[in-house]
Length: 123
Image (cartoon, rainbow, N blue to C red; front, side):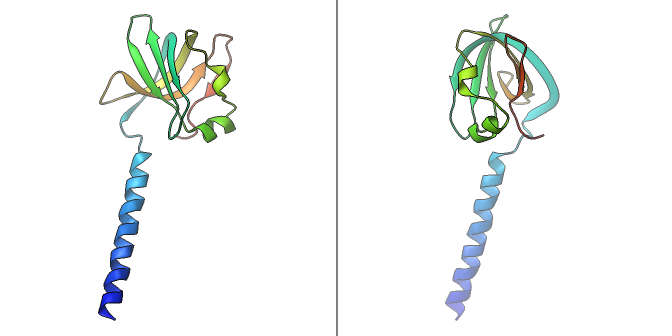
């Protein structure tokens, strides 16, 4: 009886720890609340989960790596991979990382034709 109780307790603790680590992946506290727009040339698109990544090189020659939402969330927002062509001029609004100036959470993209799309379906 005592052994069964220990196994149940251990299982409950492990489930809680797993839940905490999964939740921690989605923390956005790294990113400052001020949204800034960046103009540049799209140099890379990584269309994969857990997050799509877009890299631009600004006019000043700085590369910024933007983390966007998941593929399924972007799809719900009307965003498709085909909308992004490496080498095109692009404007991305995002929240810069407080840890790394070359990293940002993408909030919105403004394409060359003026169309705007959300890149993060959350806060």
